[in-house]
Length: 278
Image (cartoon, rainbow, N blue to C red; front, side):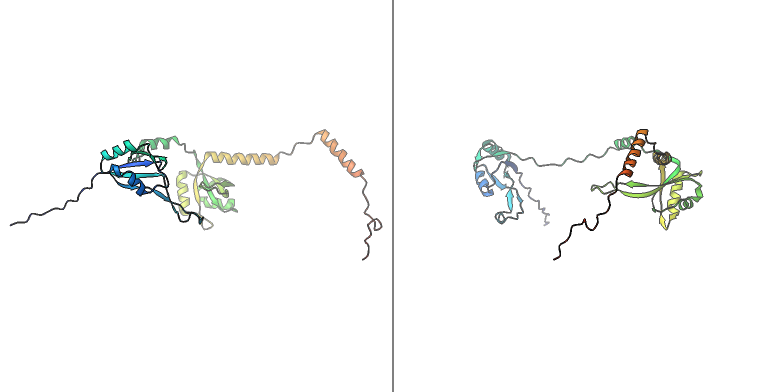
């Protein structure tokens, strides 16, 4: 006699229908609402609440506050539909009650980024043009000298060196004051590509025992620095414009009046107010 194996199948829970109730009085309890819906076969009632932290002693014994909504579960769709049809808009504890079927929230799947659109966006961004013979060095010491930079790039025949200071703004949520950095533009004369020169200098060279950040320089930055230097030299060489004849005559008259004005002699001891002796 052989025994046949028995399999225990878990009983599947019966499907229930949830009804959403809104405009519920804050004073209503779950017991009051369950009694109100008992004629329609409500199996359970839930009133969501939120925790309130108060400093006042008057309300310290009531840390939870209802949200004014509730969820009621019914055994089937027929009971839920009948409760909605009969009770929607009725008065419950001096407030008009609204009922409707509860629709569970389902998050929409996040669409995957289209590779073609990403490529088009990258193509739309214009990369600044870089110079073929000039490199950009930043975060240099404040007192860096021309000879130190020439020694750094001595293998690549440095031709021109522009040392300057610029302000850098950190791109963060909290705004910070800009800080100044010392940078340099170095024009080289070498047949080696400028990108390879930057890689070699970053890997091997150091300045005062510290690594150096070197990148190909932007053409726009080179033009900006040269224009600033040109403007400063022009302002230093050009003398201020001569004063107009009328202004010169006025200044001469003011000086003569100041020279002819009488100078008051210091007050003598007899003119000073006497101080009564105690």
